[in-house]
Length: 167
Image 1 (cartoon, helix red, strand yellow):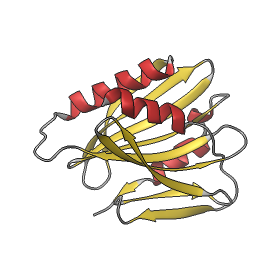
Image 2 (image 1 turned 90 degrees about the vertical axis):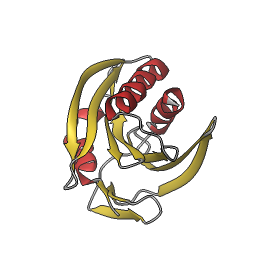
Image 3 (image 1 turned 60 degrees about the horizontal axis):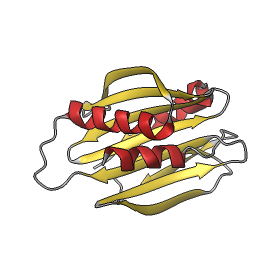
């Protein structure tokens, strides 16, 4: 599962840049909202990695910058501790990308104080900042990244901060 999630993180990190006013995207099925930069096409698709069904929502531009929200539901009755979930996803991201972790810290997210982790991965100057959030039995992986350190820019942080898990 961690390799599948990490593969999507790397594949999804193919493009998006902030320009103009941001547009709020709401997914009733996904139970989240996020603000994607205006003027870009937001695409949602289902992906399957082994037995894991994932939903990926992303937008891309021609500068190889990317903003993506993906989620996967844990199996019914699964009682994985948050640390184990976060460790697995982080390890998979690093293994799949061939990058290295620059920073990793535990966070709490939103009014519901969901457990989470923020990870910054560098691969030859391309930076991807990821927030992994465990909202009940749903795991959200929200990331922004691209070449020339894009994952550490204000535009990337603005997108990450705009994400909200909804009911």
